[in-house]
Amino acid sequence: MSATPVQIRRTLCASIVDGALYAVMIGVSESYLGAFAVSLGHDDLSLALLATVPLLVGALIQLLAGAVATLSGTWRRAVVVGAVLQGLSQVGFVSIALTDDSRLWTLLLVKTLFWSSGALLTPVWNAWMAELVEGSLRERFFAHRGGIVYLALVLSYLGGGQLLEEFRQISQLMQGFAVLFSVAVVARLASAFTLQLHVDVTNPAVMGPGTMARVRLALRQGSWRITALLAAVGFGVHMAAPFFTPYMLRTMQLDYTVYAVLTAVAVFVKAVAFPFAHRVSSRFGLGRMVVVSGLAVAALPALWAVVPSVPGLLVVEVLGGLAWAAFEFASFQLLLDASPSECNVEYFSLSSAGVGIAQLCGALVGSALLATWSLSYTDVFALSGAVRATAVLLIALPLIPAMNRARLRLLVLRPAAIRAAAGVVNRLLVRNSTGKATQRPVDASPVKLSKPGAGSFSPKL
Image (cartoon, rainbow, N blue to C red; front, side, top):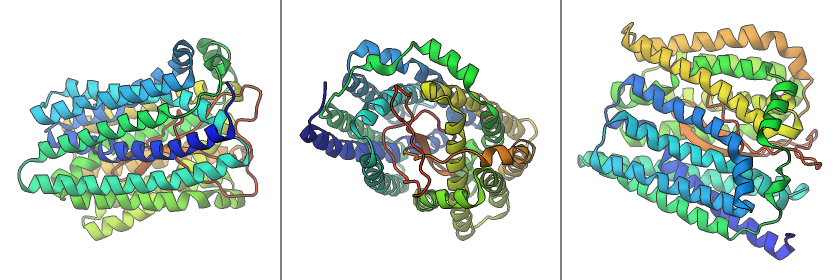
């Protein structure tokens, strides 16, 4: 089915509303799940599992997206059903909050369902929107959409922190979480309604060969050196990543308003800095950018370990936003360069799964150090920084000449989560080549930071 200009225009308007509603869901729900787990009293091992297992399962589930789209019959049906399931999965969070259910398996199950339903629909969304928004319109549209999405994300996140603090002061914190999750359910279901207003433009059968054929092609033709680097860095990052939230809420005893503001600073700085990463990489090369930004990322947990005050941590968060913007930009560019265009989705899913396994191992090691060796959070932060730096020096440094030869592409991103000490975690919009150009080189203009519907790699580093 071909779409008329009027249908395309109506769809793009609906897509902007969808993006804003999706951002509200992320801002008041997923981004507070770490704080929710801390408030329920989960220990460090539980926090480690909650931070990593759902992402790993989601990366593997994504490999089924092509089959699901084909079975559903249309792009729209597949995406709308996925969005509805993701919205309804959050009813589980509401139930856990209202019953004060502190069992690990219930929260882990619900969070895994939430991530899996979102991961399953995102490659389908990518292919669908790529058919609708082509050529020069794509960059302008996603840049405009991305600005609105980011604004909705930051405002909803800050509002969520203020609401939680007000409920905490009247000793009704779990009810506050229930309110946030209820808002998220409504936002995602409303988002699904706007997706139903989109026009279908093609048959999902055009996704090409079967999933396993594309997986084998990705394994055979893809380059995995960058994935190895990201896995090693991810191991070091997740030795500490699940524990910044309990450090702020339990050890530093910050209130939820300050907690939200601290994290929002990194989100804002990263959003502002990301579009300038293209110019920096054009001048100095992606290889040098990876090494320098990777070492900066390695220094961040050490700074958290030695800076005990909120004003000092605000400065650290500014530095963190800059470092993560550069590292994420370079990582996405290098992964695109390493990926066979015929199986981008499968390559990124496999890469994400590999990094996810490393992240899980890192989180388990971090929790073991806290429990068995009786180390403090700041001790683990310092060790995390050392592992990150070692990975960058041993793996990235020798690859600088090869990485500098990678060509730059237009990146279209969406926010997947907000994380303490890392800011927003983005996903990259990727689709498999079907004979058309799917990632065109951008050699003269800066990359636009945009947040459309999804990609398949989320280096939550």
